[in-house]
Image (cartoon, rainbow, N blue to C red; front, side, top):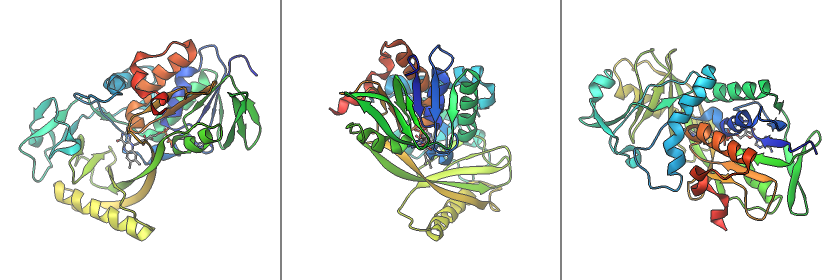
Length: 341
Ligand SMILES: Cc1cc2nc3c(=O)[nH]c(=O)nc-3n(C[C@H](O)[C@H](O)[C@H](O)COP(=O)(O)OP(=O)(O)OC[C@H]3O[C@@H](n4cnc5c(N)ncnc54)[C@H](O)[C@@H]3O)c2cc1C
């Protein structure tokens, strides 16, 4: 076994951040993905980076760090090109009253029917999630990490209760620590070494529209519509998955989103559907991140979470620091896998 080597399984936003933060620190790091960076659910994400105003969730210390950690990460990796647009939320979206009451008409001049009151979160942001994963993987590689794409981990190697590496379609790769950031597939890999990971695949739909540039300024979110717009006019709009069985049903969903978008904004009447896709989110059963070493195993560290885009910068830095130092990060205490046992 290479000296204190680390294998990270999964190059989605979470694994890419982990690999970046782990690499260049004196321990050999190998990042493995069955596809390309960001090709899992990360590619179907709305990619809103938000900080709760208040939270009593066990993961609150991690969530409060999320936005600041992206500012730090962007200073290190300017190519992340984060869009610091802020967000505007109303009609009780997410039950989260904002810290400020904003003038929706001033913030989003093209809203046809602006709400009298809306919560404005000026620090919220968004990014291109695939590009972000690629940037972090490239930076990890520059820091010395080995990156294996198109390589599937078929099982974790285990000897005498200790995870000692991974088996791939190509070879067995020994490791002192295996970090599992394989999204929904982490469940089966854990089960193979007797670890139950209570994570369900939870579908959500991402609709992409083509619209005139400059219609939407920030991230807008109401129970009826979530949307943000890129500089080239592309609109991203996530929506719930209602069990659409085929492409025709999905396309009908996308048309409904398009119609809502057109009804919300002046200048959006000629918006067209570009694409619609379903993403399978790794959803811990209690909706809280699962970060740390599962009980009863050595050599294994799990990083599986919903809101993985929001949390990736903070979780990646904190998890890497504790893997490298052996000192637990207090901000992750509410996220431990041991809470289920
Ligand atoms: C419509 C929609 C909107 C969303 N909006 C937001 C949002 O606004 N903000 C937010 O924070 N989150 C949002 N999410 C959730 C967010 O996208 C996910 O939490 C996040 O992308 C999870 O990243 P991940 O790296 O854990 O998983 P993934 O991106 O799935 O990465 C896992 C990687 O592991 C690889 N892999 C799996 N199995 C193996 C194996 N056996 N061997 C090798 N490689 C393997 C896969 O190829 C994949 O690349 C949204 C999701 C959807 C679908």
